[in-house]
Length: 233
Ligand SMILES: [Zn+2]
Image (tube, rainbow, N blue to C red; front, side, top):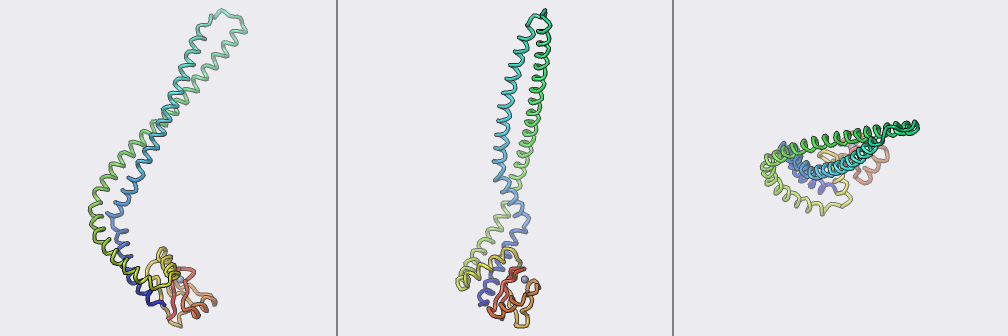
């Protein structure tokens, strides 16, 4: 049962070596960072632009409000000042209200302008980063293409072999193997002697009586702890 899986693992290990070579290659890392950045930067810039447009319309509305208040004040100033006492009190109150309304609007405008300045700074920073990332992309692209050129053709050959071997392995076993591959390092398949059924040969975890019995009976167990596949010879 395990012979084919061992064969698969040996071939798959070659694939993993190529994949790891990609992952640890500095140019490849830089390349991926640049690609990811450039993919999302347009969206981020659009978001900033949308927010800026919104702020501008808010500012415009506030400026109009400010102008209307200024008109009110002019009318108010034109009122004759020889008035009765009740009128004077009213006018004083009205004057205070106007001053407060002006102050509130000024505060709001100041706040919006502050946010606008921040947005502009963000946009500038993003543009500078975009320029740097484009350069990084260009610099790393050539070596990544070289790695890919050899790597991808090697990978294709191996993948084809793996597909052939996998045809001779039960799918549920393949699924377990693939699950282990995602989380664990090679080797993923272990073959043990009859004297070695009480512990996981990969991680050393002690098996329960039931697990040991299962391993003896089915000649196979998937370690609960490390997910590796343990076969009995
Ligand atoms: Zn284990």
